[in-house]
Amino acid sequence: MSRKVLIIRHAKSVGGRHDKHLYPKEGAPLSDQGLKDVSKIRDYLIELGVDIESEPVAVSELIRTRQTAEVAGFKTIKSYSVLNEVNTGLSPEELERMLQIKLVPKEAINRTKKLLENPPLENIWVTHGLLVAGLAELLRIPKEQLYIPDMASVTEITLT
Figure 1 (cartoon, rainbow, N blue to C red):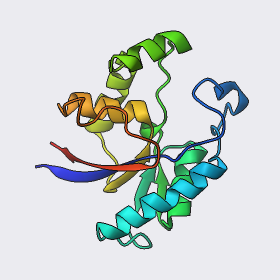
Figure 2: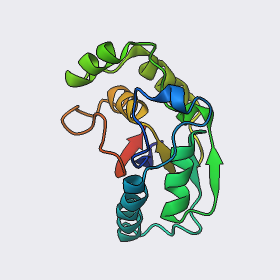
Figure 3: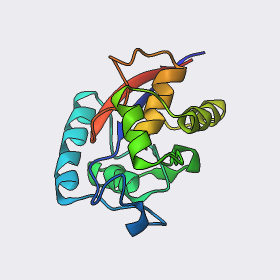
Figure 4: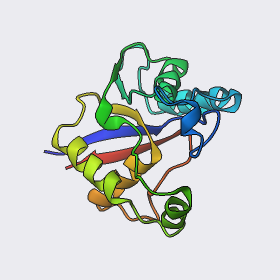
């Protein structure tokens, strides 16, 4: 049986991909721009007919996904480690090369397999770019349609 899920990539955080050492535990919080960009998410979800105040949402354990959900107006928020950012173990240069040619690191594929084996029950997930790329790869969504979406974006996918 298939199921539709809205995947939200968190809004922009302070720092960047290479600044993980600054926020080792919960990750970096949203930047001022990220906080502003969450209004795009909220407006789009309302346009889709989502009742933000009553709809439960799944987030990763990192602060930027929780903040994205909270600022968007969600009230029922549950954290899942399987939605966390993927640690590839690659150097920043190696990862950038992979991203430029739209390859999905094997670590993202492995995490996505775990996610799909036991997905959150919620139909809205706030997560990270490489996990979305892994979902697109495993669900056979063409890379021109979905690879790593923009920050503060919403994508509907069908889990099969």
